[in-house]
Amino acid sequence: MGLFDRLRGEDDERVVFLGIDGVPLDLVEDHPAVFENLTDIAETGSGGRLESIVPPESSACWPSLTTGVNPGETGVYGFQDREVNSYETYVPLGRHVKATRLWDRVTDAGRDATVLNVPVTFPPSTRVQRMASGFLSPDLESATSDESLRETLDGFDYRIDVNAKLGHDDDKTEFLENAHATLDARYEAFSHYLVEDDWDLFFGVFMSTDRVNHFLFGDYATDGEYAEEFLEFYRTLDEYIGAIRDSLDDDTTLVVASDHGFTRLEWEVNCNQFLADEGWLSYEDEDHDSLTDIDDETRAYSLIPGRFYLNLEGREPNGVVPEDEYEATREALIDDLESLTGPDGQQVCRRIVKGEDAFDGAHDGIAPDLVVIPTDGFDLKSGFSGKEAVFTEGPRNGMHKFENSLLYATDPDLDLTDANLFDVTPTILDLLDVDADAEFDGESLLA
Image (cartoon, rainbow, N blue to C red; front, side, top):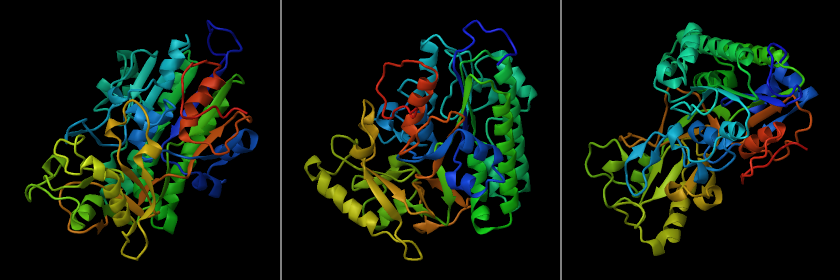
């Protein structure tokens, strides 16, 4: 970088990875004037589609992106996971990720990494030279790996996440101000440590993009009230990416990627209410709000997002579906899910994935039996508190999408044909010339 003496060779390759959570490829490609820098990176380097994972949910996506393996190996399947041999659930944190992270492989190879604001990394690792954990961290004090980092970030008015509660207001002014302040502080922190630290891998994530998409993507898609503010937010993000790119030397590759895509949300689909209506799910009493409240007549239940489990004998504590009836029961559930149509008659389930086709590894004991990839517009919810209807509306107007995540890189030699999230870690290791001696579900995109 030319700003301080390095102990290693002058020509060692370095990588800066910038995550832009939930940013869809078509948003960038449809607005080259808003995304001038990403457009230029695509023209002079590489850029294109990156398929997400099943399910396309940030809590599952980031562990897979940063390890190169599927949830069967990471052990994280979504925002809420089930304990083995129990109906108790928990919110997965960094300590629940079982597979080896990218930055740990870099450190094991004798190189240095700075890691800032990556979701599902709490508590922060002390193996890397500096880490501030991201989404799901309770506060800045516990999210930072050392006192110096904590004090510096506090001076930037750094916040772990956007205040999503503000997005529930009809007037989105405060929400937008909070999102911009979060974005600005994140860029200030990234810029500071890009110069301050002697890194081989700098890995930082902008997650405010996901928050803005959840509450304003519908405005953008329909040219609604906040469409211009939505694009202005992204113009600022692109300017920050451009400034970071301009600060890097010729030995550093910039990689920008999203973990999943986005689309407009029209209906929230209360999957457990659907299962209850169809006779698959019932509760011990009327006052229910969790998986532990289901009764011994339940044959199936759902966890967010769109994960369906049979209440199987020998796996669930009070399972009622015999093992020899597993396939027939699962096929019956598939048939019922395929029959589910929205208020406009549109089929809700665009694709239904069997668990064994998506998950494989040492931690697949809590893998779902089915995962539904919904038709655009139908956001699959899985609360256990009673809903009056299967289809409801909420404050969000944007939802995650499987197909249209993205990857851009200043290296022109990346082949993005059929690229997916599992390819990111082996690609970065290849760019760094680090031999991981590991098996990944993806492969390097370097041609």
